[in-house]
Amino acid sequence: MTNAFRRATVALVALLALGLAAPAASAHAVLVSTDPAAGAVLDRAPAAVTLRFGEAVEASFGAIRVYDANARRVDDGAVGHPGGHGNTVAVGLRPLTNGAYVVTWRVVSADSHPVHGAFTFQVGRGAAGNEQALAARLLAQQGGSALVGGVFAVVRWLAFASLVVLVGGAAFVLTCLRRNDSRAVRILTLAAAGVVVTAVLGIALQGPYAAALPLRDAARPAVLRAVLDTRFGHAWAARALLGLAALALVRPVLRGRLVAAGAAAGVALLGTLAAAGHASVGSLVPLVLASDVLHLAAVSFWLGGLVLLAACVLPRDRAGDAGEVVARFSPLAFAAVVVIVVTGTFQSWREVGSFGALTGTTYGHLLIAKVAGFTVLVALGSVGRRWVRGRATGDLAAVRRSVGLEVVVAAAVLALTALLVNAAPARTAYARPFTATLTSGDVSVNVVISRAKAGRTDVHVYTLTTSGGIREVAELTGDLRLPAREIGPLVVPFTRAGPGHFAAYAVDVPIPGRWVLDLTVRTSDIDQTTVSTTVRFR
Image (cartoon, rainbow, N blue to C red; front, side, top):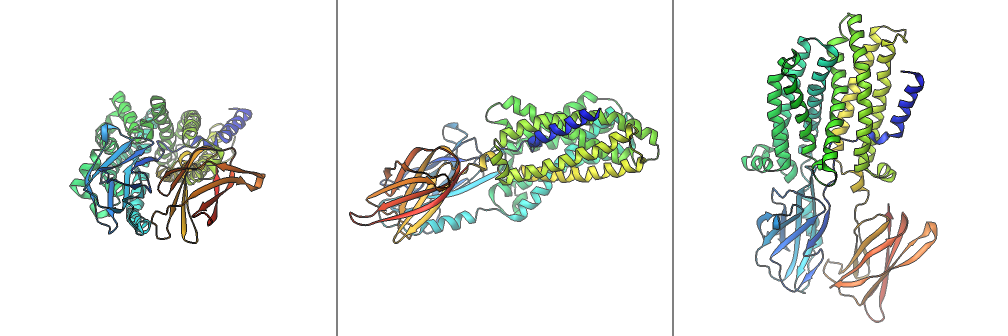
């Protein structure tokens, strides 16, 4: 490989810095609408509460709970998908009396991660209590256990590492090592066992993780059955079975027998990662699934090959043998890097979408850190390539140190992957709804902007008493201005949408920036108050 070509490769990696997207990371589900609407005042009690999301969700583990003002459950517990629509979840209600009610919800999105929230509504026009404080308290109880989250993160990392070593290590032995090595057999057998064990542990932990239960509930039969009825449960159970098959196939495959069966099992194992994620829903599903599996295959060959190279080849003193193996591995590893960059760029475009989302979200920051680790791995790999081509003055010891460091960095990259799959992707997080509560005198104003991103968005304003009840006002007007660019005021065309509820639909925010929303509330013919908040539109 010429210096110019090597420089071009480095430039490509830099230009495609988004290229190391997490395998099968996906957008967490976003609540689109509710019935009753948040903050609604109803003349008649509803028979059910219905939530609609932007993607299919799973409604196990008591997804919707409805409480009265005294924190007593008033739903019937029968959560389901009305009409078989996967993005709609509903729960029936017992007969309700006049008063305020709090709805809390927790569902599992297509990427197997839980999302939750709360809202309130009122039946009748009597005085409401401080149901907002009750909603906050109930929602806090659904936050989940930090211990469960921490343990599950470790299990996910071990699951990634086991799959990478098993699939990539087997491919390395067949294509580069080309001999039946007893140490390789032991390592791959241990990796296959790791696949099985982490799959079983993942199924046990998904229940407490998704339902915000304590760790001690991981082995409850009812919880395990609920997990096995989900997409996550299907995928991880399949991985456990495939891991058992891999345990039986390790020795025959490394001896050159049943190679086709081993390859099929490897591809299927990688497919279980995509099957539990967002790649299996939405647009371009076949292309996204293929990209995910190809991305994981390339990562596995590169990183799994490094582990086997470090463990089975370089510790020995047969420099000639090591040189032959590294010479065979180097061009294949380079090809794997190219595949990682191309498929990872496609995945990152799907999950990030913009430079602002990359730099302004937790997902983006983790992705940048992962790309940095990827770049270090590419740089370290050049040591082995120079040694093979006789361009380095050092001996095999330098390559051993370099490959050992590569394995350590690869473990850190896999740890970042485990964090990435648990973070809301940048494209979703960057355009989250905006909410604020503003108070002036005896009027409290709750502002909800459906999408805090430049373009068209909906603005909802609820006028409340300071204790959280509905406050009827004579009129509400508003405008937007961008002081930094001296734009505005732009009128926000509010119309009355219900008692204490004003809405403006398809409001056009022309450019990103920190816009000031001014709201004027007229409480009588002669009394009015103005409140303001700053909204960062991405």
